[in-house]
Length: 298
Image (cartoon, rainbow, N blue to C red; front, side, top):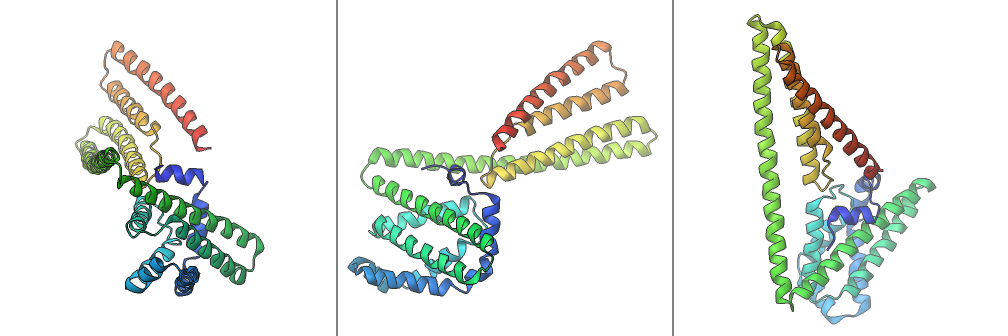
């Protein structure tokens, strides 16, 4: 199955779509019960014995459906949302509910929501935009749930696939653990840099004003880059892209700081030449990487 980030890109699901859906949150809370009622009516209309049995015996089914409905407008379309949809698909497979009925239910939901928007949203342009965003999130839900259903079905019969899935699941959990370790390490390092900055400030009060100012400025540069690194990693954990330019920026700032300190300490010219050359090379690499990333963002 594609990653959630890829699925969002394929459906062109943008932050604007998230904002539009979130803006409907309050309105749709009033229609949650009605939506669940219509879904149940559709189940009875189809006269499928298995579906009706599930509907009659599952006490919390209506609550689960209502929770899923409200999540459509929560604005939290992250990895947790993605895994929740996968779980829904797997549960449907284990319960023996065919994908056909999922598609019928989604169609019923879509018709209901379009009807609500037509009644409640007077602005034609806004209504069109909201309908577009709703269609995207419904299609994304159906895509992920159906694919999860199919994968779960395959797993019932393919031992090799089970082994592969177990390895992939382990790798995903291991990767998540490493990401958590990385963000914790960045926090510890950032705290250490703050300590360096405090030490540099103290040197100002000891009379070494020039050295204190230069080193403090250099430390501030590194602190700024560390904050960017943490923001990038947090965005990555939420499903965003990881941009290499931030890491190149760390190297560039570190060399610039060394040049500032070396100048203050009157280092040999050979050392200065090496540092200047390193700054030039890293600067060119940073510029090239930034340009490439700008094209990707567009």
